[in-house]
Length: 250
Length: 254
Image (cartoon, rainbow over all chains, first blue to last red; front, side):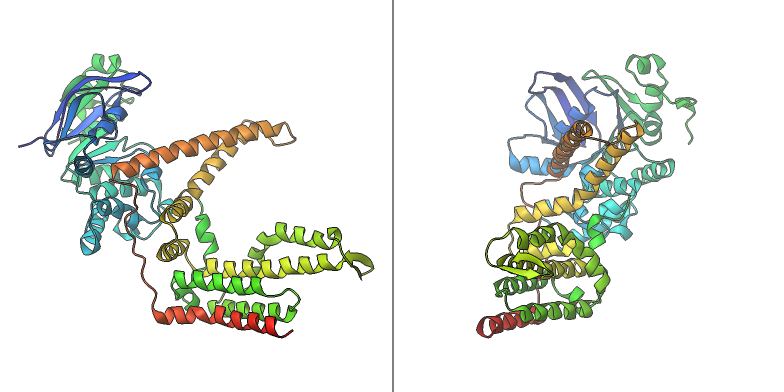
């Protein structure tokens, strides 16, 4: 089966000369849930922006569901942006339309969907995050946790091959955090979760990658990665006080 | 976080005025204001007639006079300027309450005051009976350039976000003992405005990124703007038609 995501030999320097990625090789199978861990400035965001061709021009290449990302081919780019759904960290950046319904419809409408099919996608995506009752509200009148869930719906409506979440648990209160976890676990989709919330990674992702200084320094089952105290310390990752990665609840 | 600025203007209701298609209301207001502006300022009875027309619309829409009066205060800065006119304008002098004022200036002040107030009250009625979102759809329907509608839509969405950021910055300043006491405070205020501009600019970039990630290619997807029925256009035409009659009478008679 074609993997959801293949990154081969990806290296990238920003136009000002700062090199951020130094040869990344990653493969993520269909249906996997993978955490991408790393300290601030490790290159996580730069890597994510390569997945749908917003950044490009370095060495190496990215394939999504077997389709090679080519930033010069508009048709390919359009399909890649459908296949890779990025949920950005600040929902106020992601929700820019006047109502929740229009925002969720923005992506599929750009794909050319109209009428009943579009409505079906919007309702379906909102139901999957438990926000169907809020379709006609304006985003600024929702709580932060609700906005984050709607942000997930805006991407689900495009029926992506892989869902990429940038710090999904940031700024959430414990209840919203748990609700989001339950929603993410209920989705039948490949997930790449960028975070430095290690317990959240342990709860949601069986596999973890550690990105540090532009290279992948670890790739394995999350409990193993999180139990390697030397590895975590070397890359400025820390478990919260009292958290035991081996003793995680069922 | 409080209710959106936009929603503070809208008064929910189900009156015939509320239900009218937004594009009809926009055109009706524009035509009404045109008739008002075209009326010679000496025909004072005509302006009274316009005011009666607006009062009738307000009554049908169930918008109270108190609310209209409070919102009309936005006009004050312009009115202040108008009130100065009789004193600074040249021309023949007349005596009002023992003070010599310019007759031409008096007419000028009346002209600004009457026409301005009628326009402001008309706009208040439009805003109170039409959701901001519907106004944008109406503008789109009237073929207002898409870029202008998009800019207005983003303004509507982000006004609260930016206002929230400004409020947080002010709290942060106050928390560290800042008080705007004299001119020296301008320096600090100017810097925080600069910082706010940068933050807003950066947010703009992030929003654009999020739009690209969901397939934005420069055009907003078509929205559900619906056509107005001839009946709605007919209803909406009542106000400007009556105003046009008044304007025509004002020009012919005296």
